[in-house]
Image (cartoon, one colour):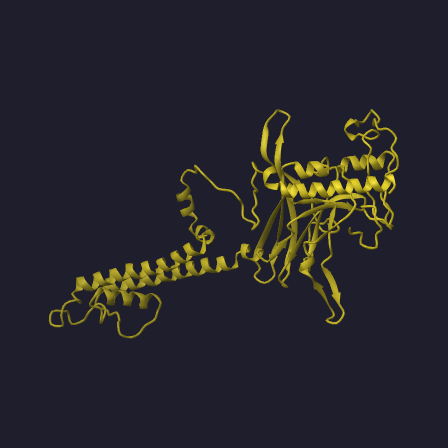
Length: 422
């Protein structure tokens, strides 16, 4: 085995070891920074010491009930109707009791306020029948008592409002966007590899339903700590991460699994991160997809977060889409949705990779095998490079980067796989 193959194999072995070690140490590295977005898309945020929190929630009763769990919503649903029936049933009983309808046939007035209502049970049944217009025909209001007429009008109005409110709550909970987001899948891992001579970070997202998400857009935010020039520590600093589809557009045509791509360029917060720093630095990348459901017309948002232990450096996703000539349609195999293959990838940061191409290096070939850039620290040390508008970069001449031929894989073995997987 020649020196080139030994160096290539050594670099690829180090890459695989770092990926495995980062996955094993994930909870240790992020022990003091729990995820902001949980795996189910919920925000890991609680509130404390909020003044008048309950009164503020009661002022927006509709949203409070919709956001509550189903057991509390159903409890409010049943208790609301039952309490309304009991309340007006008590009023009906008081009206009948004052009028003397509960007395015997000899002492009772000849015309009652409500016929066949002589007890609280009868008043409760009449209240239920009146509010929901059941009308069995046994209990009937008369013209004898004006209070009974006004009570019937009030109960009819209150019943309509109560029924409309409860029906709206149940409908809103059934059609809310959170339920639609449950059929959107995000890859559990993010990958970093070369694409068109640029380091890119990629994740994958798929929709399990055939109904499309209209106007689907994808965005991302990076959460990590940052210290300002004045020494202020911003523990959860959010920065925008530009992501998009294959053409780097935020708009998605979501008909099959889509690879979300982030180019690590000079505007990227990952521009100065190499393989080691990305696997060890504490951060959280939140990716969220927004759109409108084609079936219900409601807006939805699905969220997922990736931490440093979720990033695989030197991998790319396998294609999960194939064409079935017998059925004359395209088939999505979700067994391959999260599968990745190892590819030869520089272990340095995107900034240093750009410096390499600008000062003596040459980009990888467009075809003809994989390429793994290897550096000799005695010849090239990017940390000592100073760039400004006046001074020329203090960078010595570089030897050409080592590349693997198409007949050899990243371990120096003969490669018969056309896709370049190890």
